[in-house]
Image 1 (spheres, rainbow, N blue to C red):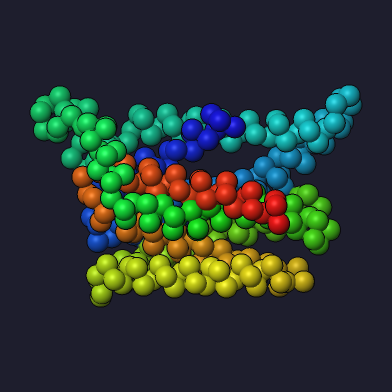
Image 2 (spheres, helix red, strand yellow):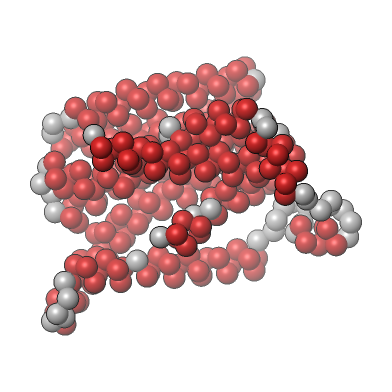
Length: 284
């Protein structure tokens, strides 16, 4: 799980990469689409691993007559497939992708077109900006909530509505499937708000997202029918993803020279929020 978590830091490099490819005026849309479709992998994994690979391997181990629990063996085996897909895609990124519109950093540094970065200088500049920490908290309250919900949703639907593991995984995936457009929509509306009212517009839109995120998570917790719970979950997810998109629409404006470091700190806030909300969820 530690190595898998380190691999997850690719999100931060992706957000920095997107910022180098697009101007700040459309950074909200670009960052949100890239991250949203990345998070969409959570929903795909719920369906692909939980509802397809898991029962397939469970049946295979059951037919093989293994002495160990087929369910335990099947979920462990199913995890291998996404890992292989990540390895294959990583090869294509390293082999064919460019670092920026101006070319790869290694070549530009060799030609003297790009100064060598000072890691500590960048970190100090980002850490000493209080806005970095404000965005860290904000991102923890949206992406951290998403992580907690994604981890607990399938179990919740299985226990609360007595669904099978496969059905619960399929229903829970609706939360992640909203990433198909919701996070991109949040970033896009952040860019539109910026065009009309500047940074104040981005902040106002983010406030609206957080307000309705809180409202609909309460509605979801009160739902007593499966249909009502799914509807509330999807609406809740819409504003969670939109808040995430609006957050990274603001990141490129904090300190353009250290955007990567700022994105890393803010992104870490999302993971920290996931840990904190998971602990609170278990305690309550």
